Image 1: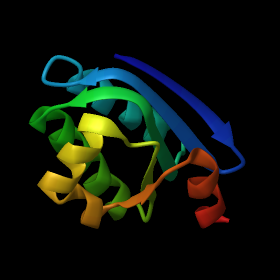
Image 2: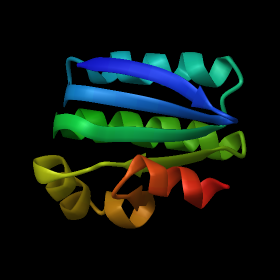
Image 3: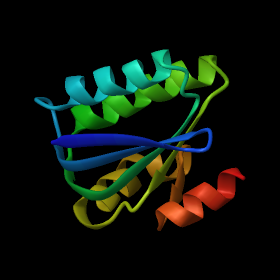
Image 4: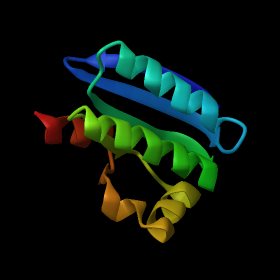
Length: 111
């Protein structure tokens, strides 16, 4: 898994590629916590290059989402497709979070 983060105005875009599973989920969660500690409150997870997500990955997302909710933050997703989209739909995450087909669409929804 590879994680890259960049800022667009007040939004932190977190691009995740590869697999988000039991091995990599702690790294994902740690990176998001670091970005939160640095003052980030609005996050878009760009999952367009994510090929797999496990229950451990979903758990990490929920943990970060709860932390953001307590901080009056926001977590959106873009680019979810294929097997990752299937997992989001089956798990009900599609109704828990705001999902966008593209990063541009997610950014526009915030402004």
